[in-house]
Image (cartoon, rainbow over all chains, first blue to last red; front, side, top):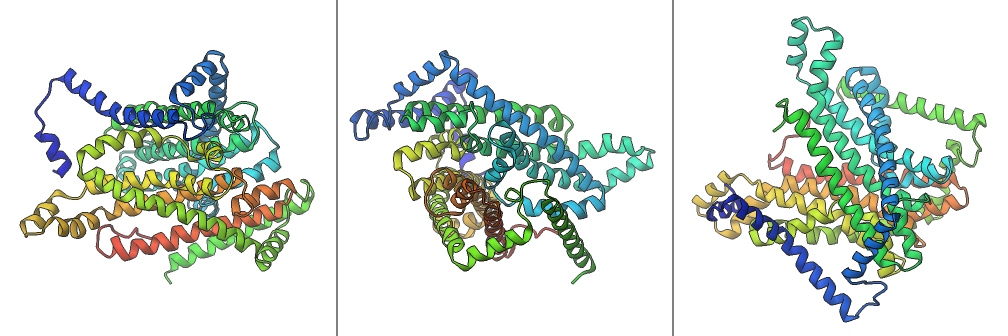
Length: 272
Length: 261
């Protein structure tokens, strides 16, 4: 038991609803403190209010943009771009990863290329993609796909290689065909790794996409919203946009991936 | 050298040569404009001439300065705060919700905000690097200190270690595999962030800036040359710096096993 756990156990047991309230208050407290400090600094007028708007102004900007439908439009475009790029990356990445894990020849050919391409930051490819594919949606989606494919390939490859030899042999001894072996042994066995890869890939896609939207001059998108707002010194709009980006990132992680994990690998007993 | 290793080197060389030959063939076929898809000798010439006249070194130096300063700030903040969070519950209660709320915001989203606040230039890139690198370092340190085997703590306590000895001799080495993982992840993100920040917050020097500047003049050869330099520096840090850090600390202490093959 670590020291932190010890202090937790020392607390008197609380009833369910009571404990939940306490958890909410405890989690909200730091935000109240930081928000309060922000408000005080903003109202003191040390910085120009255009550059350091108080929170109510940011909230008003958020409400104004949401009510007029501008913010949802930006958010939907960003999400579509993310999903498009990520779907491409998942399809290509899992296929390439499985091929590399199953066939020696594919591994020999692809591994050097993947290991050279992976460490270069994705955003550095952006100007090249812009030159090759023009401005707009196409380079943004392709770049997101390109960048998020690397962790997916690596993890799928590792996962397929990490399937226990004894599972393969026992399934073969029980007369499993190649197809059955793949569907019922290799795929479930590699799935925890594949899911980790997809998760890392999505996180990377999300981090890159915002930057790419600023550079690729797309007409709609959250990255463009905050970058464009800079021109007009609309700091309130920028901060509202940053907040939406944060909420979307959190939702992707908590709602999408934890669900998928609970429904697959946790249920099959591959992971706890 | 073992036969398996020789074989892998041979295969890698063959693959890279074939890939280079394919690229060269496409570039020379004239299917695409030569300015957009320069041949490899042209890229090599651009790399050599920019290295020779010192501009590439100046760009790389500017980028390294920003990334190292931001990364150092992130270490100085992330490791102590992570340790404090793991050791003292009120500090954890205060900072953990903030960290979980800020972490999913990509560091590049702050670039426009920071440009307004701090103007164009070094400050923006350094702060973005700091933002990108702090969270992996902080959260890994936190979970590393929390996951120190309680048996070790009690054994050291029973053998009469005082708080200070417990901290330096048990907790820090025990948490070090996590901390090094955090530093690694942090640097990876910092390296991405610095390139993006330099591209957006145009300053006159920096590898990210030179790529975007080259786009304006359709200098695809210079862009590819800079990509090579960016990749090489990232590779050196990942393999040599963090690899040797790992070998001299956690591997030597027997905290983790070296990966096989």
